[in-house]
Image 1 (spheres, helix red, strand yellow):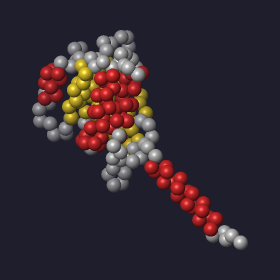
Image 2: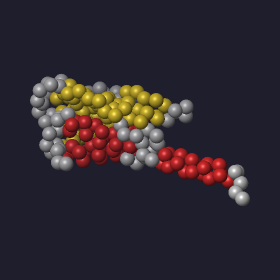
Image 3: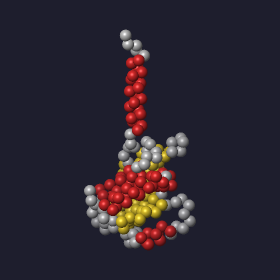
Image 4: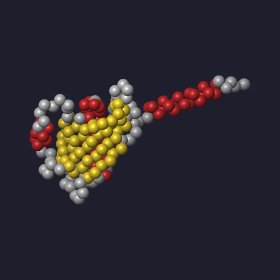
Length: 181
């Protein structure tokens, strides 16, 4: 005769197994909304990227972000230079000098501009603002807003996921038109 005590125990183990599997799964996909200047724009060939993702998200996040974004930009026939924005930069013109030295035709700025922290201070949801500017006209040619949920922090590819989301939207919006698939 089987006891009723064992049956809930088996269900409990199953529920725990499902709960653990849910915790091990990857983070939900970021949601990106965007807007592009109407009409045709010159396709970027030399992109200078300035980002602060390392400030709050960490060096591993930044490194995987840069690696993925570089792969995508390269696949679109462009070259890219990346600089990390810091909160304590004293020379506001330093980034502009680096951009001019690189000879950028476009400037992509990616900044965290909000989100949610847990009670322990971990970022559990981040919002990023991404803007691309034409360096000749100094006009914004594309803007994206990324809601980036984080179920697990410190995953080795988190930055890669953010870069892929931004790059995918840039391609979808036909900012980059010469990309290999």
